Length: 174
Image (cartoon, rainbow, N blue to C red; front, side, top):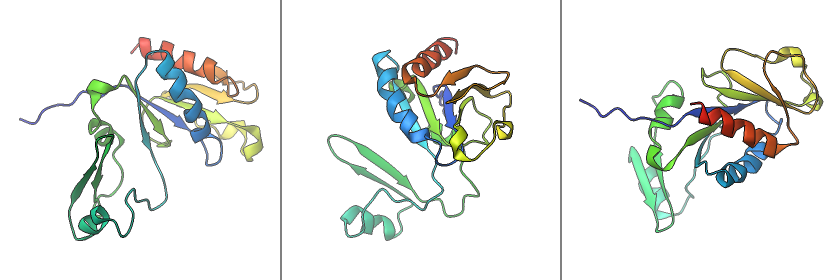
């Protein structure tokens, strides 16, 4: 029987493109570390991406047809898996590939439509209206630069420390 992997809680930071997901995460990660939380990260991209460089041996060997390639050094390693036949990304499968013994939380950038706990980001200047926010049972808060009349807590997006405290308290309840 296959080993069942236990993954840390997932928390998505979700918003429309250009709203500041990456900027917020770059602020939150060190603040969570200060609180003793060991975060991992899964980032969704709509772009064709490659973590390896053409001309490097590892790139050439992977392009020769290896279904999976690990590139490793003393300081880090990366696993690249070719998935040309996969119909879509499976967030929970991706999370299960992470080493749960070294993580307390997996932050997720994007995956807005996944059934996973999330904090939405809303900025008035992005051209969207607050009424367009999709607040479902998975949304635990909204980080915004303006007050919103919604059924979940509204966090000040310019107060990363406050958002980190909110996440830390949420994590304690998991």
